[in-house]
Amino acid sequence: MLREQRRDALQTSLQRHLAELSAMRKTELQARNEDLVSLAIAIAQRILLHDFEYAPARLQGLVEEMRERFFEAPARLIAGPAAYAALHTKVFAELELVEDEGARPWSLRFESQELRLDFGLERQLEACFAALCPTVRG
Image (cartoon, rainbow, N blue to C red):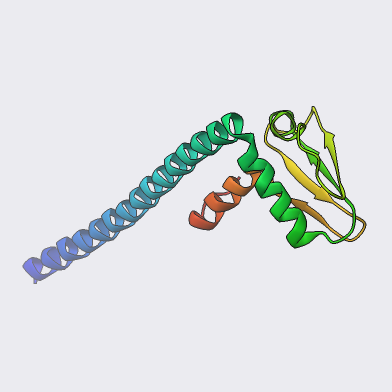
């Protein structure tokens, strides 16, 4: 009887410890996944920012494509300082370019009477991170 009680107690203890280890493993794997996604997004950001900084025509092309897809009427593009520097040499049809010195460097906000959209690089990468790691609360 005493042996059975000890065995049952040991079995219960072992099951509890295994459950705790399993939960710790799951938490650790989730944290590692979030670290990996964060690193991948940071690398993508560096590549894109470098590309946009040294080849502004690529950013200009993306802006033109977004304007054509989302805005039929005249619109404003409110750009952060770095985005403005990459875009200010191009004249966009029916698009007023405005610099927002207080915004994030690569902020891009389109505004018209009907619609407002945030296409900023930092914002889009944050959205990617949130979609890939939904348990992270910012």
